[in-house]
Amino acid sequence: MHPLQCVLQTQRWGPLASVSWLLLRTCRAHSSVPSTACPSSERQQEDGVRKDFSSRLASGPTFQHFLRSASAPQEKPDMEDPPPYLTVDELLGRQRKVYLETYGCQMNVNDTEIAWSVLQKSGYLRTRNLQEADVILLVTCSIREKAEQTIWNRLHQLKALKTKRLRSQVPLRIGILGCMAERLKEEILNREKMVDILAGPDAYRDLPRLLAVAESGQQAANVLLSLDETYADVMPVQTSPSATSAFVSIMRGCDNMCSYCIVPFTRGRERSRPVASILEEVRKLSEQGLKEVTLLGQNVNSFRDSSEVQFNNAVSTNLSRGFSTNYKPKQGGLRFAHLLDQVSRVDPEMRIRFTSPHPKDFPDEVLQLIHERDNICKQIHLPAQSGSSRVLEAMRRGYSREAYVELIHHIRESIPGVSLSSDFIAGFCGETEEDHLQTVSLLREVQYNMGFLFAYSMRRKTRAYHRLKDDVPEEVKLRRLEELITVFREEATKANMASVGCTQLVLVEGHSKRSATDLCGRNDGNLKVIFPDVEMEDVNNSEVKVRAQPGDYVLVKITSTSSQTLKGHVLCRTTLKDSSVYC
Ligand code: 5AD
Ligand code: SF4
Image 1 (cartoon, rainbow, N blue to C red):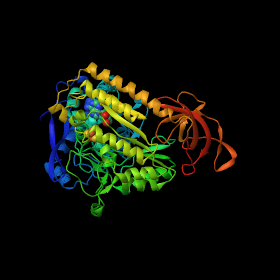
Image 2 (cartoon, rainbow, N blue to C red; image 1 turned 45 degrees about the vertical axis):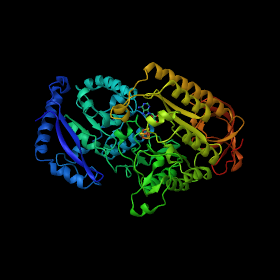
Image 3 (cartoon, rainbow, N blue to C red; image 1 turned 60 degrees about the vertical axis):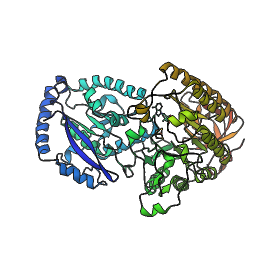
Protein backbone atom coordinates (compact mmCIF):
# COMPACT_ATOMS: atom_id res chain seq x y z
CA MET A 1 0.00 0.00 0.00
CA HIS A 2 1.27 3.46 -0.72
CA PRO A 3 2.12 5.16 2.58
CA LEU A 4 -0.19 7.95 1.74
CA GLN A 5 -3.43 6.34 0.85
CA CYS A 6 -5.63 8.98 -0.68
CA VAL A 7 -9.26 8.21 -1.17
CA LEU A 8 -10.89 10.63 -3.52
CA GLN A 9 -14.10 12.01 -2.23
CA THR A 10 -16.38 14.20 -4.25
CA GLN A 11 -18.77 16.71 -2.85
CA ARG A 12 -21.18 19.08 -4.52
CA TRP A 13 -19.53 22.44 -5.11
CA GLY A 14 -22.12 24.48 -6.92
CA PRO A 15 -22.86 23.24 -10.39
CA LEU A 16 -19.33 21.83 -10.73
CA ALA A 17 -18.35 18.79 -8.73
CA SER A 18 -14.98 19.56 -7.17
CA VAL A 19 -12.72 16.74 -6.09
CA SER A 20 -11.19 16.93 -2.67
CA TRP A 21 -9.58 14.35 -0.48
CA LEU A 22 -9.78 12.33 2.63
CA LEU A 23 -6.59 11.01 4.08
CA LEU A 24 -5.90 7.82 5.94
CA ARG A 25 -2.34 6.91 6.79
CA THR A 26 -0.95 4.02 8.75
CA CYS A 27 1.53 4.55 11.51
CA ARG A 28 3.72 1.59 10.46
CA ALA A 29 3.87 2.52 6.82
CA HIS A 30 6.06 5.47 7.71
CA SER A 31 9.61 4.52 8.45
CA SER A 32 10.29 8.04 9.69
CA VAL A 33 7.87 7.51 12.58
CA PRO A 34 9.97 6.70 15.66
CA SER A 35 9.28 3.25 17.00
CA THR A 36 8.06 4.75 20.24
CA ALA A 37 5.14 6.12 18.26
CA CYS A 38 3.75 2.57 18.24
CA PRO A 39 4.91 0.91 21.48
CA SER A 40 4.52 -2.84 21.68
CA SER A 41 1.44 -3.10 23.92
CA GLU A 42 -0.32 -0.45 21.98
CA ARG A 43 1.01 -1.89 18.75
CA GLN A 44 -0.31 -5.39 19.49
CA GLN A 45 -3.65 -3.96 20.44
CA GLU A 46 -3.59 -1.74 17.39
CA ASP A 47 -2.41 -4.55 15.09
CA GLY A 48 -5.55 -6.52 15.92
CA VAL A 49 -7.73 -3.54 15.37
CA ARG A 50 -5.87 -2.70 12.19
CA LYS A 51 -6.20 -6.19 10.72
CA ASP A 52 -9.89 -6.16 11.38
CA PHE A 53 -10.07 -2.61 10.11
CA SER A 54 -8.01 -3.50 7.01
CA SER A 55 -10.24 -6.41 6.09
CA ARG A 56 -13.26 -4.19 6.44
CA LEU A 57 -11.52 -1.47 4.49
CA ALA A 58 -10.88 -4.02 1.72
CA SER A 59 -14.60 -4.67 1.46
CA GLY A 60 -15.36 -0.95 1.35
CA PRO A 61 -15.57 1.98 1.01
CA THR A 62 -15.62 1.93 -2.74
CA PHE A 63 -15.33 4.90 -5.02
CA GLN A 64 -19.07 4.42 -5.62
CA HIS A 65 -19.69 4.98 -1.92
CA PHE A 66 -18.16 8.44 -2.14
CA LEU A 67 -19.98 9.18 -5.36
CA ARG A 68 -23.21 8.25 -3.57
CA SER A 69 -22.45 10.79 -0.84
CA ALA A 70 -21.72 13.33 -3.54
CA SER A 71 -25.12 13.02 -5.11
CA ALA A 72 -26.81 13.45 -1.74
CA PRO A 73 -25.24 16.61 -0.34
CA GLN A 74 -27.70 16.87 2.54
CA GLU A 75 -26.59 13.50 3.86
CA LYS A 76 -24.38 14.28 6.86
CA PRO A 77 -22.22 11.74 8.66
CA ASP A 78 -24.40 10.18 11.28
CA MET A 79 -23.91 7.71 14.10
CA GLU A 80 -26.75 5.43 12.96
CA ASP A 81 -25.35 5.28 9.47
CA PRO A 82 -21.64 4.49 9.76
CA PRO A 83 -19.40 4.20 6.70
CA PRO A 84 -19.02 0.52 5.64
CA TYR A 85 -15.52 0.22 7.12
CA LEU A 86 -16.61 1.14 10.67
CA THR A 87 -19.20 -0.29 13.05
CA VAL A 88 -21.67 1.87 14.97
CA ASP A 89 -19.83 0.89 18.14
CA GLU A 90 -16.53 2.24 16.86
CA LEU A 91 -18.12 5.62 16.26
CA LEU A 92 -19.03 5.93 19.93
CA GLY A 93 -16.94 7.94 22.36
CA ARG A 94 -17.36 5.34 25.11
CA GLN A 95 -16.85 7.97 27.81
CA ARG A 96 -13.46 9.02 26.50
CA LYS A 97 -12.56 12.48 27.74
CA VAL A 98 -12.06 15.33 25.31
CA TYR A 99 -10.07 18.48 26.09
CA LEU A 100 -10.80 21.36 23.72
CA GLU A 101 -8.52 24.38 23.38
CA THR A 102 -9.55 27.41 21.32
CA TYR A 103 -7.33 29.90 19.50
CA GLY A 104 -8.25 32.92 17.39
CA CYS A 105 -11.53 34.67 16.77
CA GLN A 106 -15.03 34.41 18.15
CA MET A 107 -16.01 32.15 15.25
CA ASN A 108 -13.57 29.61 16.67
CA VAL A 109 -15.16 29.85 20.12
CA ASN A 110 -18.46 29.02 18.47
CA ASP A 111 -16.90 26.25 16.36
CA THR A 112 -15.46 24.71 19.54
CA GLU A 113 -18.98 24.40 20.91
CA ILE A 114 -20.22 22.90 17.63
CA ALA A 115 -17.41 20.31 17.70
CA TRP A 116 -18.19 19.56 21.33
CA SER A 117 -21.91 19.23 20.61
CA VAL A 118 -21.16 16.63 17.90
CA LEU A 119 -18.81 14.66 20.18
CA GLN A 120 -21.12 14.82 23.17
CA LYS A 121 -23.90 13.29 21.09
CA SER A 122 -21.49 10.53 20.20
CA GLY A 123 -20.79 9.59 23.82
CA TYR A 124 -17.64 11.57 24.62
CA LEU A 125 -17.17 13.39 27.93
CA ARG A 126 -15.58 16.83 28.27
CA THR A 127 -12.73 17.57 30.62
CA ARG A 128 -11.13 20.87 31.61
CA ASN A 129 -8.08 18.98 32.88
CA LEU A 130 -5.47 18.42 30.19
CA GLN A 131 -3.78 15.64 32.18
CA GLU A 132 -6.84 13.38 32.20
CA ALA A 133 -7.74 13.89 28.52
CA ASP A 134 -7.94 10.95 26.09
CA VAL A 135 -8.40 13.29 23.15
CA ILE A 136 -6.94 16.80 22.82
CA LEU A 137 -8.41 18.98 20.10
CA LEU A 138 -6.96 22.37 19.19
CA VAL A 139 -9.34 24.70 17.34
CA THR A 140 -6.87 26.74 15.35
CA CYS A 141 -6.42 30.07 13.55
CA SER A 142 -4.38 30.87 10.43
CA ILE A 143 -5.03 34.57 9.98
CA ARG A 144 -1.45 35.62 10.76
CA GLU A 145 1.86 33.76 10.96
CA LYS A 146 2.06 34.42 14.71
CA ALA A 147 -1.25 32.65 15.32
CA GLU A 148 0.07 29.52 13.59
CA GLN A 149 3.39 29.68 15.41
CA THR A 150 1.51 29.54 18.73
CA ILE A 151 -0.08 26.25 17.64
CA TRP A 152 3.22 24.72 16.51
CA ASN A 153 4.70 25.61 19.91
CA ARG A 154 1.71 24.10 21.67
CA LEU A 155 2.08 20.90 19.67
CA HIS A 156 5.68 20.59 20.85
CA GLN A 157 4.51 20.84 24.45
CA LEU A 158 1.83 18.22 23.85
CA LYS A 159 4.39 15.86 22.37
CA ALA A 160 5.78 15.15 25.86
CA LEU A 161 2.31 14.37 27.16
CA LYS A 162 1.61 12.02 24.29
CA THR A 163 4.93 10.19 24.71
CA LYS A 164 4.19 9.71 28.42
CA ARG A 165 0.78 8.28 27.56
CA LEU A 166 2.20 5.76 25.09
CA ARG A 167 3.06 3.60 28.09
CA SER A 168 -0.54 3.63 29.34
CA GLN A 169 -3.52 1.52 28.26
CA VAL A 170 -5.44 4.33 26.62
CA PRO A 171 -3.40 6.21 24.05
CA LEU A 172 -3.77 9.97 23.77
CA ARG A 173 -5.16 11.25 20.47
CA ILE A 174 -4.42 14.75 19.23
CA GLY A 175 -6.44 16.63 16.64
CA ILE A 176 -6.05 19.91 14.78
CA LEU A 177 -9.37 21.51 13.93
CA GLY A 178 -10.33 24.63 11.99
CA CYS A 179 -8.40 27.03 9.77
CA MET A 180 -4.89 25.64 10.22
CA ALA A 181 -6.08 22.11 9.38
CA GLU A 182 -7.63 23.55 6.24
CA ARG A 183 -4.66 25.68 5.23
CA LEU A 184 -1.81 23.27 5.88
CA LYS A 185 -3.49 19.89 5.41
CA GLU A 186 -0.87 17.15 4.99
CA GLU A 187 1.96 19.51 5.97
CA ILE A 188 0.74 19.15 9.57
CA LEU A 189 0.56 15.35 9.36
CA ASN A 190 4.02 15.24 7.85
CA ARG A 191 5.65 17.68 10.25
CA GLU A 192 3.96 16.47 13.42
CA LYS A 193 3.61 12.71 13.36
CA MET A 194 1.84 12.81 16.69
CA VAL A 195 -1.18 14.56 15.19
CA ASP A 196 -3.87 11.89 14.72
CA ILE A 197 -6.68 13.81 13.12
CA LEU A 198 -7.29 16.92 11.03
CA ALA A 199 -10.75 18.41 10.61
CA GLY A 200 -11.39 21.55 8.56
CA PRO A 201 -14.09 24.07 9.57
CA ASP A 202 -16.80 22.24 7.59
CA ALA A 203 -15.91 18.74 8.84
CA TYR A 204 -16.90 18.79 12.51
CA ARG A 205 -19.82 16.39 11.97
CA ASP A 206 -17.20 13.88 10.85
CA LEU A 207 -15.23 14.01 14.13
CA PRO A 208 -16.60 10.71 15.57
CA ARG A 209 -15.53 8.91 12.39
CA LEU A 210 -12.12 10.57 12.27
CA LEU A 211 -11.50 9.66 15.90
CA ALA A 212 -12.66 6.09 15.27
CA VAL A 213 -10.16 5.80 12.43
CA ALA A 214 -7.46 7.29 14.69
CA GLU A 215 -8.21 4.60 17.28
CA SER A 216 -6.85 2.02 14.86
CA GLY A 217 -3.53 3.86 14.69
CA GLN A 218 -4.20 5.64 11.42
CA GLN A 219 -3.95 9.34 10.82
CA ALA A 220 -7.25 10.64 9.47
CA ALA A 221 -8.24 13.91 7.85
CA ASN A 222 -11.29 15.58 6.42
CA VAL A 223 -10.68 19.05 5.05
CA LEU A 224 -13.54 19.20 2.59
CA LEU A 225 -15.10 22.61 2.28
CA SER A 226 -18.82 22.76 1.73
CA LEU A 227 -21.19 25.09 -0.07
CA ASP A 228 -24.05 24.53 2.33
CA GLU A 229 -22.75 23.49 5.76
CA THR A 230 -24.00 25.94 8.40
CA TYR A 231 -24.43 23.47 11.28
CA ALA A 232 -27.97 24.86 11.46
CA ASP A 233 -29.21 21.83 13.42
CA VAL A 234 -26.21 21.60 15.76
CA MET A 235 -27.10 23.81 18.68
CA PRO A 236 -23.84 24.68 20.43
CA VAL A 237 -23.81 23.66 24.08
CA GLN A 238 -23.76 26.62 26.47
CA THR A 239 -20.60 26.06 28.45
CA SER A 240 -21.12 28.39 31.37
CA PRO A 241 -24.51 28.15 33.09
CA SER A 242 -23.98 31.60 34.64
CA ALA A 243 -23.34 33.22 31.25
CA THR A 244 -25.37 36.32 30.46
CA SER A 245 -24.62 36.36 26.75
CA ALA A 246 -24.16 33.95 23.87
CA PHE A 247 -22.92 33.92 20.30
CA VAL A 248 -25.22 32.70 17.55
CA SER A 249 -23.63 31.77 14.25
CA ILE A 250 -25.72 33.07 11.33
CA MET A 251 -23.42 32.60 8.36
CA ARG A 252 -20.05 31.11 7.47
CA GLY A 253 -17.32 31.80 4.94
CA CYS A 254 -16.44 34.84 2.89
CA ASP A 255 -16.67 35.70 -0.82
CA ASN A 256 -14.89 39.06 -0.65
CA MET A 257 -11.37 37.93 -1.44
CA CYS A 258 -9.57 40.89 0.11
CA SER A 259 -6.06 40.44 -1.24
CA TYR A 260 -4.36 39.90 2.16
CA CYS A 261 -6.84 37.49 3.67
CA ILE A 262 -6.64 33.72 4.04
CA VAL A 263 -10.21 33.35 5.34
CA PRO A 264 -11.93 32.63 2.00
CA PHE A 265 -9.43 29.76 1.55
CA THR A 266 -9.77 28.29 5.03
CA ARG A 267 -13.45 28.82 5.66
CA GLY A 268 -14.75 28.61 2.13
CA ARG A 269 -17.65 30.23 0.33
CA GLU A 270 -20.22 32.45 1.98
CA ARG A 271 -23.40 30.66 3.08
CA SER A 272 -26.16 31.67 5.47
CA ARG A 273 -28.07 29.70 8.01
CA PRO A 274 -31.86 29.64 7.53
CA VAL A 275 -33.67 32.42 9.45
CA ALA A 276 -36.05 29.92 11.10
CA SER A 277 -33.23 27.95 12.73
CA ILE A 278 -31.53 31.15 13.97
CA LEU A 279 -34.77 32.34 15.54
CA GLU A 280 -35.27 28.96 17.19
CA GLU A 281 -31.83 29.19 18.82
CA VAL A 282 -32.39 32.78 19.95
CA ARG A 283 -35.77 31.81 21.49
CA LYS A 284 -34.12 28.95 23.38
CA LEU A 285 -31.42 31.26 24.70
CA SER A 286 -34.06 33.76 25.80
CA GLU A 287 -35.93 30.96 27.64
CA GLN A 288 -32.67 30.05 29.37
CA GLY A 289 -32.56 33.64 30.67
CA LEU A 290 -29.69 34.95 28.55
CA LYS A 291 -29.70 38.71 28.13
CA GLU A 292 -27.51 39.26 25.10
CA VAL A 293 -26.87 37.54 21.79
CA THR A 294 -24.19 38.42 19.30
CA LEU A 295 -24.95 37.34 15.76
CA LEU A 296 -21.78 35.90 14.37
CA GLY A 297 -20.28 35.48 10.92
CA GLN A 298 -17.24 36.35 8.83
CA ASN A 299 -19.43 38.82 6.95
CA VAL A 300 -22.40 38.97 9.18
CA ASN A 301 -24.27 41.74 7.34
CA SER A 302 -23.88 40.02 3.94
CA PHE A 303 -26.43 37.52 5.32
CA ARG A 304 -28.69 36.11 2.60
CA ASP A 305 -31.05 33.24 3.38
CA SER A 306 -32.01 31.68 0.03
CA SER A 307 -33.07 28.36 1.58
CA GLU A 308 -36.63 28.66 0.21
CA VAL A 309 -37.63 29.53 -3.34
CA GLN A 310 -40.10 32.22 -2.27
CA PHE A 311 -37.29 34.11 -0.48
CA ASN A 312 -35.86 34.91 -3.88
CA ASN A 313 -38.75 37.32 -4.51
CA ALA A 314 -37.70 39.39 -1.51
CA VAL A 315 -37.04 43.06 -2.20
CA SER A 316 -33.37 43.51 -3.01
CA THR A 317 -31.18 45.72 -0.82
CA ASN A 318 -28.39 48.00 -1.95
CA LEU A 319 -24.75 48.21 -1.05
CA SER A 320 -23.54 51.18 1.01
CA ARG A 321 -23.01 54.23 -1.25
CA GLY A 322 -19.61 54.24 -3.03
CA PHE A 323 -18.92 50.56 -2.27
CA SER A 324 -18.46 47.66 -4.69
CA THR A 325 -17.85 43.92 -4.52
CA ASN A 326 -15.20 41.64 -6.02
CA TYR A 327 -17.94 39.21 -7.02
CA LYS A 328 -20.96 39.35 -9.35
CA PRO A 329 -24.00 40.98 -7.69
CA LYS A 330 -26.13 38.40 -5.85
CA GLN A 331 -29.90 38.47 -6.06
CA GLY A 332 -32.78 37.61 -3.73
CA GLY A 333 -32.89 35.90 -0.37
CA LEU A 334 -33.83 37.23 3.04
CA ARG A 335 -31.27 39.85 3.97
CA PHE A 336 -29.64 41.01 7.20
CA ALA A 337 -32.21 43.77 7.90
CA HIS A 338 -34.98 41.15 7.87
CA LEU A 339 -33.05 38.87 10.23
CA LEU A 340 -32.14 41.71 12.60
CA ASP A 341 -35.77 42.79 12.72
CA GLN A 342 -36.96 39.26 13.55
CA VAL A 343 -34.23 38.53 16.09
CA SER A 344 -34.80 41.81 17.94
CA ARG A 345 -38.51 40.96 18.33
CA VAL A 346 -37.87 37.66 20.12
CA ASP A 347 -37.27 39.25 23.53
CA PRO A 348 -37.30 43.02 24.13
CA GLU A 349 -35.07 42.47 27.19
CA MET A 350 -32.39 40.76 25.13
CA ARG A 351 -29.59 42.91 23.72
CA ILE A 352 -28.61 42.19 20.12
CA ARG A 353 -25.12 42.75 18.72
CA PHE A 354 -23.46 41.48 15.55
CA THR A 355 -19.91 40.91 14.39
CA SER A 356 -18.02 41.08 12.13
CA PRO A 357 -19.61 43.13 9.36
CA HIS A 358 -18.18 44.49 6.12
CA PRO A 359 -18.73 48.23 5.49
CA LYS A 360 -20.19 47.52 2.03
CA ASP A 361 -23.39 46.01 3.48
CA PHE A 362 -24.88 48.84 5.51
CA PRO A 363 -28.00 49.85 3.59
CA ASP A 364 -30.35 52.39 5.22
CA GLU A 365 -32.77 49.62 6.31
CA VAL A 366 -30.10 48.22 8.65
CA LEU A 367 -29.10 51.64 10.03
CA GLN A 368 -32.75 52.61 10.56
CA LEU A 369 -33.43 49.43 12.49
CA ILE A 370 -30.40 49.90 14.75
CA HIS A 371 -31.60 53.44 15.46
CA GLU A 372 -35.21 52.44 16.17
CA ARG A 373 -34.92 49.31 18.27
CA ASP A 374 -34.05 49.78 21.93
CA ASN A 375 -32.53 46.32 22.19
CA ILE A 376 -30.22 46.53 19.15
CA CYS A 377 -26.97 47.95 20.48
CA LYS A 378 -25.83 51.21 18.93
CA GLN A 379 -22.42 49.80 18.22
CA ILE A 380 -20.97 49.19 14.77
CA HIS A 381 -17.69 47.56 13.84
CA LEU A 382 -16.58 49.08 10.54
CA PRO A 383 -13.24 47.51 9.53
CA ALA A 384 -11.39 50.15 7.48
CA GLN A 385 -8.02 48.28 7.21
CA SER A 386 -6.26 51.41 5.87
CA GLY A 387 -6.78 55.16 5.54
CA SER A 388 -5.13 55.33 2.13
CA SER A 389 -7.25 54.85 -1.01
CA ARG A 390 -4.18 53.54 -2.84
CA VAL A 391 -3.63 50.79 -0.25
CA LEU A 392 -7.36 50.04 -0.07
CA GLU A 393 -7.29 49.40 -3.80
CA ALA A 394 -4.30 47.06 -3.46
CA MET A 395 -6.20 45.31 -0.67
CA ARG A 396 -9.23 44.99 -2.99
CA ARG A 397 -11.55 46.33 -0.33
CA GLY A 398 -14.01 47.81 -2.82
CA TYR A 399 -14.05 51.37 -1.43
CA SER A 400 -11.97 54.52 -1.21
CA ARG A 401 -11.10 56.49 1.93
CA GLU A 402 -13.65 59.10 0.85
CA ALA A 403 -16.49 56.55 0.51
CA TYR A 404 -15.59 55.11 3.91
CA VAL A 405 -15.58 58.53 5.61
CA GLU A 406 -18.90 59.41 3.96
CA LEU A 407 -20.35 56.17 5.35
CA ILE A 408 -19.09 57.09 8.84
CA HIS A 409 -20.86 60.48 8.60
CA HIS A 410 -24.03 58.84 7.34
CA ILE A 411 -23.98 56.30 10.18
CA ARG A 412 -23.40 59.03 12.78
CA GLU A 413 -26.30 61.05 11.38
CA SER A 414 -28.59 58.00 11.27
CA ILE A 415 -27.68 56.66 14.73
CA PRO A 416 -26.78 59.50 17.08
CA GLY A 417 -24.37 58.41 19.82
CA VAL A 418 -23.30 55.29 17.91
CA SER A 419 -20.12 53.66 19.11
CA LEU A 420 -17.65 52.77 16.35
CA SER A 421 -14.77 50.33 16.11
CA SER A 422 -12.44 49.19 13.34
CA ASP A 423 -9.64 46.85 12.23
CA PHE A 424 -6.42 48.20 10.70
CA ILE A 425 -3.42 46.53 9.10
CA ALA A 426 0.00 48.24 9.35
CA GLY A 427 2.62 47.70 6.65
CA PHE A 428 0.63 46.10 3.83
CA CYS A 429 2.51 45.47 0.55
CA GLY A 430 3.69 48.74 -0.97
CA GLU A 431 2.50 50.90 1.97
CA THR A 432 4.54 54.12 1.97
CA GLU A 433 5.08 56.52 4.86
CA GLU A 434 2.50 58.79 3.23
CA ASP A 435 -0.05 55.93 3.13
CA HIS A 436 0.66 55.21 6.79
CA LEU A 437 0.07 58.87 7.70
CA GLN A 438 -3.27 58.67 5.90
CA THR A 439 -4.23 55.84 8.27
CA VAL A 440 -3.08 57.91 11.25
CA SER A 441 -5.26 60.78 10.03
CA LEU A 442 -8.28 58.48 9.59
CA LEU A 443 -7.88 57.33 13.20
CA ARG A 444 -7.82 61.00 14.29
CA GLU A 445 -10.75 61.94 12.08
CA VAL A 446 -13.12 59.12 13.12
CA GLN A 447 -12.07 58.80 16.77
CA TYR A 448 -13.08 55.15 17.22
CA ASN A 449 -14.21 53.82 20.59
CA MET A 450 -12.51 50.47 19.99
CA GLY A 451 -9.77 49.30 17.64
CA PHE A 452 -8.06 46.08 16.57
CA LEU A 453 -4.69 46.75 14.99
CA PHE A 454 -2.33 44.27 13.36
CA ALA A 455 1.01 44.15 11.54
CA TYR A 456 0.63 42.70 8.04
CA SER A 457 1.48 39.02 7.73
CA MET A 458 1.78 37.62 4.20
CA ARG A 459 -0.31 34.45 3.70
CA ARG A 460 0.30 31.89 1.00
CA LYS A 461 -2.54 31.40 -1.54
CA THR A 462 -3.83 34.97 -1.20
CA ARG A 463 -3.83 37.41 -4.10
CA ALA A 464 -1.24 39.56 -2.35
CA TYR A 465 1.05 36.51 -2.09
CA HIS A 466 0.81 35.91 -5.84
CA ARG A 467 0.75 39.48 -7.13
CA LEU A 468 2.35 41.82 -4.59
CA LYS A 469 5.60 42.18 -2.70
CA ASP A 470 5.77 42.03 1.08
CA ASP A 471 8.21 44.94 0.93
CA VAL A 472 7.71 46.79 4.20
CA PRO A 473 10.52 45.67 6.55
CA GLU A 474 9.36 43.97 9.76
CA GLU A 475 10.74 46.73 12.01
CA VAL A 476 8.91 49.38 9.96
CA LYS A 477 5.63 47.41 10.21
CA LEU A 478 6.06 47.20 13.99
CA ARG A 479 6.96 50.88 14.34
CA ARG A 480 3.90 51.88 12.27
CA LEU A 481 1.74 49.53 14.31
CA GLU A 482 2.98 51.14 17.54
CA GLU A 483 2.15 54.58 16.14
CA LEU A 484 -1.36 53.48 15.17
CA ILE A 485 -1.94 52.00 18.64
CA THR A 486 -0.78 55.22 20.33
CA VAL A 487 -3.02 57.41 18.18
CA PHE A 488 -5.98 55.04 18.56
CA ARG A 489 -5.60 55.13 22.39
CA GLU A 490 -5.37 58.93 22.52
CA GLU A 491 -8.50 59.30 20.39
CA ALA A 492 -10.46 56.58 22.22
CA THR A 493 -9.66 58.24 25.54
CA LYS A 494 -11.02 61.54 24.18
CA ALA A 495 -14.12 59.78 22.76
CA ASN A 496 -14.78 58.02 26.07
CA MET A 497 -14.28 61.26 28.06
CA ALA A 498 -17.48 62.50 26.44
CA SER A 499 -19.42 59.96 28.50
CA VAL A 500 -18.26 61.30 31.88
CA GLY A 501 -21.38 62.60 33.66
CA CYS A 502 -23.69 60.48 31.49
CA THR A 503 -25.96 57.74 32.79
CA GLN A 504 -25.54 54.49 30.90
CA LEU A 505 -27.39 51.19 30.79
CA VAL A 506 -25.04 48.37 31.82
CA LEU A 507 -25.61 44.63 31.60
CA VAL A 508 -23.94 43.12 34.67
CA GLU A 509 -21.52 40.25 33.97
CA GLY A 510 -20.16 39.58 37.47
CA HIS A 511 -17.44 40.70 39.81
CA SER A 512 -14.53 42.68 38.44
CA LYS A 513 -11.41 40.53 37.96
CA ARG A 514 -9.34 43.15 39.77
CA SER A 515 -11.53 43.73 42.83
CA ALA A 516 -14.10 41.60 44.65
CA THR A 517 -15.88 44.74 45.86
CA ASP A 518 -16.55 45.96 42.33
CA LEU A 519 -18.94 44.71 39.67
CA CYS A 520 -18.22 44.66 35.97
CA GLY A 521 -20.57 44.90 33.01
CA ARG A 522 -20.85 46.29 29.48
CA ASN A 523 -22.53 49.40 28.19
CA ASP A 524 -24.48 49.57 24.92
CA GLY A 525 -21.23 50.34 23.05
CA ASN A 526 -19.69 47.10 24.46
CA LEU A 527 -17.18 48.96 26.64
CA LYS A 528 -16.37 47.55 30.06
CA VAL A 529 -17.91 49.50 32.96
CA ILE A 530 -16.66 49.01 36.55
CA PHE A 531 -18.67 50.16 39.58
CA PRO A 532 -18.85 49.37 43.33
CA ASP A 533 -21.02 46.40 44.32
CA VAL A 534 -23.51 48.16 46.61
CA GLU A 535 -27.22 47.91 47.41
CA MET A 536 -29.52 49.83 45.12
CA GLU A 537 -33.15 50.51 44.36
CA ASP A 538 -35.10 48.48 41.85
CA VAL A 539 -37.16 50.73 39.54
CA ASN A 540 -40.08 48.29 39.64
CA ASN A 541 -40.10 47.95 43.41
CA SER A 542 -38.76 50.93 45.33
CA GLU A 543 -39.60 49.24 48.69
CA VAL A 544 -36.67 46.83 48.60
CA LYS A 545 -32.94 47.33 48.20
CA VAL A 546 -31.17 44.86 45.93
CA ARG A 547 -27.67 43.85 44.94
CA ALA A 548 -27.09 43.51 41.20
CA GLN A 549 -26.61 39.96 39.86
CA PRO A 550 -25.11 38.77 36.55
CA GLY A 551 -27.76 39.29 33.88
CA ASP A 552 -29.32 42.35 35.57
CA TYR A 553 -29.53 45.71 33.84
CA VAL A 554 -28.39 48.65 35.97
CA LEU A 555 -28.03 52.38 35.38
CA VAL A 556 -24.53 53.64 36.06
CA LYS A 557 -23.41 57.26 36.23
CA ILE A 558 -20.00 57.46 34.57
CA THR A 559 -17.36 59.31 36.61
CA SER A 560 -14.05 58.50 34.89
CA THR A 561 -12.67 56.78 31.78
CA SER A 562 -9.55 55.40 30.13
CA SER A 563 -9.10 54.25 26.51
CA GLN A 564 -10.63 50.85 27.31
CA THR A 565 -12.73 51.08 30.49
CA LEU A 566 -15.32 53.32 32.12
CA LYS A 567 -15.86 53.70 35.86
CA GLY A 568 -18.90 54.98 37.72
CA HIS A 569 -21.46 54.50 40.47
CA VAL A 570 -24.65 52.56 40.22
CA LEU A 571 -28.02 54.35 40.45
CA CYS A 572 -30.61 51.57 40.30
CA ARG A 573 -31.58 48.21 38.88
CA THR A 574 -33.83 48.55 35.85
CA THR A 575 -35.02 46.80 32.70
CA LEU A 576 -33.98 47.46 29.14
CA LYS A 577 -37.32 48.95 28.10
CA ASP A 578 -37.71 51.04 31.27
CA SER A 579 -34.26 52.52 31.08
CA SER A 580 -33.84 56.15 30.20
CA VAL A 581 -30.24 56.81 29.37
CA TYR A 582 -29.22 60.44 29.49
CA CYS A 583 -26.25 62.72 29.45
N1 5AD B 1 -2.18 40.19 8.17
C1 5AD B 1 -2.56 41.00 9.19
N2 5AD B 1 -3.82 41.18 9.56
C2 5AD B 1 -4.77 40.51 8.88
N3 5AD B 1 -6.12 40.49 9.01
C3 5AD B 1 -6.62 39.64 8.08
N4 5AD B 1 -5.62 39.12 7.36
C4 5AD B 1 -4.47 39.64 7.82
C5 5AD B 1 -3.11 39.49 7.47
N5 5AD B 1 -2.74 38.70 6.47
C6 5AD B 1 -6.84 41.31 9.99
C7 5AD B 1 -7.84 42.25 9.29
C8 5AD B 1 -9.15 41.60 9.61
C9 5AD B 1 -8.88 41.00 10.97
C10 5AD B 1 -9.84 39.94 11.37
O1 5AD B 1 -7.59 40.46 10.84
O2 5AD B 1 -7.75 43.50 9.90
O3 5AD B 1 -10.22 42.51 9.64
FE1 SF4 C 1 -10.95 38.36 5.07
FE2 SF4 C 1 -11.89 40.45 3.70
FE3 SF4 C 1 -13.42 38.23 4.07
FE4 SF4 C 1 -12.86 39.85 6.17
S1 SF4 C 1 -14.03 40.41 4.35
S2 SF4 C 1 -12.78 37.61 6.12
S3 SF4 C 1 -10.82 40.54 5.70
S4 SF4 C 1 -11.55 38.36 2.86
